Structure formats: C-alpha cells, structure tokens
Length: 437
Image 1: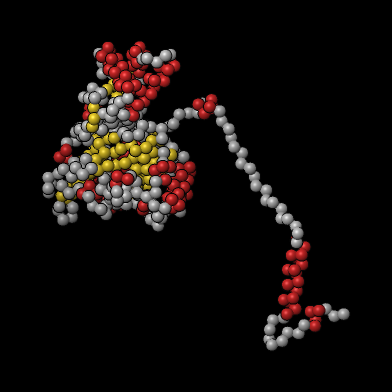
Image 2: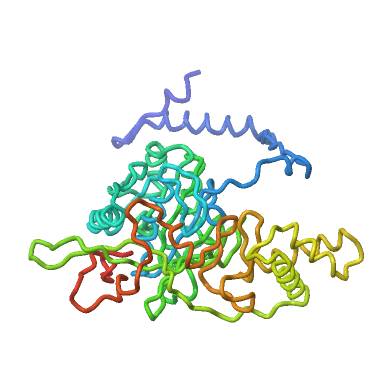
C-alpha cells in the first residue's frame, strides 16, 4: 500500500498538498494528546511579611533631618511656587546652606553634597552665582555640582544616580522640564513621576527635591494631580503676594510642624554693565526682617489658654524671657484640674504641642518663650523653626552666616522695590517669564 502522500499530485502550480496534510495531522495529534487534561497551576511564591513589636519600632533611630524640622535627610520633597515667585533663587540659597552645613532661616542644617539639575533658566544661572559670590565674598560651595544638559527623569534615573553622592541631595528644577511629555493632571502619569523620583531616592539613599509650578489658580497649590504632594515627605511653597511680599511656607512635613513661614527678600546685587553699557544685576535671598504681617492668634481652647497662662506664670516667676520645660511643666501641674499625674502629663503634652502648632510660643533647646513683642496675644508670620531656633528680627544673621554678608537688608535693596532705572535684575528677578524663578 502506497503512502497517502505519494498519491497526491500538485496541480496548477499550487504548493505541495502533502506537506499541508502532514502539518494538519501533526496539529490534530497534538490536540488529541492534551484533550481532557488540566494544565498544571503555576507555583507563585508567597511573600514573607515581617511582623514588628512596638518595642522594636521604638528602638529604631529617630528621623534624621537635612534641614531640621523642614526637610528629612532621606525622602522625596516638593518645592512649588508661581512663576516669578523666586523659587529658583530660594533653591540656590538652600543648596549653598546644605553644602556648607549652615543654618537656613534659623534651622539647623546637616552638611551634605548637592547635585542641582538646572533644566530652566540656564542662561541666568551664571549671573545668579556671580551675585551670590559677590554678596557673600566667597566662592559658591564646590559641594554643589550642576547638571545643565537635558534629561528625562523617567529614563535617566540610573545615569543621574551614578553621578550623585550617596546620602546627598538631588534638586530637580523643574519637574515639568524633566518630564515634558507627561500629563501632570493624570494620576497615571504623575504616578510614573513619583515612581521615578522614589527610585532615584532609593538609589542615592538621600533626599530628592522636585521643584514645581503652581497652576492657574495659585490658591489650589502645586500644579497637577494631588498625589505629588500627598506622597511627598515634605512640601514647601514659595509665595509671592500682590504687594510683592515673599515667603517660604512649610505646607507639609511628615515629621515636623506644618505652617511655618519665613518671609524673605530678593536683594539686588549690582554686577556692573552689560555689553551695551546698561546696568546689570541679579539677586540673592535675604530674610525679610521688616515683615510685620501679624495676624490675630486663633481662638484657643480652654486647655490651650491654661497652657499659655501657666507658661506666662513660669516666665514671671523666673524673671526671664525663657524657661526650661521642667519649670513650665511644674507650673502647669500645680493648678491643673486633672485627677492624676498621668492625666496631667497628657494634658501638658497636648497643650505644648498645640501652642507650638499655632505659633503661640517659641522653643529652643527645651527653653520655651512667648513670641517677641506679642506677649502671647498675637503671632507673627516669620515663625519658629521646629527643633531649631526662633526667627525674630534679631536672629536674621542665622540665615546667611557667610563672611562678608551684609547685616540687615533694607527694603530699598529688594527686587521690585528699586527706583525705576537704577538696576536691572537679571533673569526672573525682573519677572521675565522665560527665566523662571
């Protein structure tokens, strides 16, 4: 008996049908062999979950700060502000203070290397650094290094991590320039941005700071999807009010005290003339020690009123401007209506924390005092650095303790307050949209 394929004769120039039949037969045989059989279930490894006790958690070290009470040493932070608010000037100032380990607006700073990714206003960067060096009569810190070439955050995490010092700070200015093709209003796209920033933070083991814009409605905060600030460890806003007043405001700190505010000026620094002989200048950040935008202290609860009254009594008895927490606690306990020591302790802790959050009192190294000039009845918006030092007008040199720093900036030296044709501030100091600050 001849093979069935030998009897098939191709015709009309068509492909050999024998090959087609054999292929179909093989496929049929394969299906027949597996018919009725259940596929083997894939073995999925079960992730091990580690349980911890409260004692174990309490034995872990406390949060490490880069700027105490403001920016953690490890995490992702967001700094946002409207175009022309001065946020890039603030970031250059912050980078210098971190690299030098100097107090920033009175807050303690732990020294670290900084990588500053400057994706906007690169043309104005030179004049800003020149103004900084002229103002403070010293070179800008070498531990701040700049990236001026174009990069995409999602694509270049590894490349950026490879040149960033371990445990340092990476500043990306701005987020939009680092992710130009993504929709900031999309939760999915913003998730990609957050994921990339988190990967960068994990690779460097330090702090990643994303500089961002406000939207059209500045009162609604940072532009785009809310997940950016919701997931951040710290959020700072650089404000510019209609009257020209500026301030850095701590909008969120997972481990600090929200709502701290530090008024500042953009102080003009003359830099000679340009190629046409016109006056040229740039700006540096200086604390606005003349800011007196005081607001009435919010209504206090009876327990908060009692806490404030007991602090006043302790100050009066001591005859000093500040008393140790133990002295204040003793006065608080003495007249507290609580039933036992534990209840008094809890009431004191709540009152102390509430009064600090409301900016009704100051603290420095466990020494508590009332706000300068307010006697506890008003509070100023220049704030107190949590865990740091008070920031009244007498503490202004704590912000920029550099050699050659001018003492107290006067309003006439601030950008936006200059006489008509005296100086031309370079970049965003003059409000140029293309050189965003």
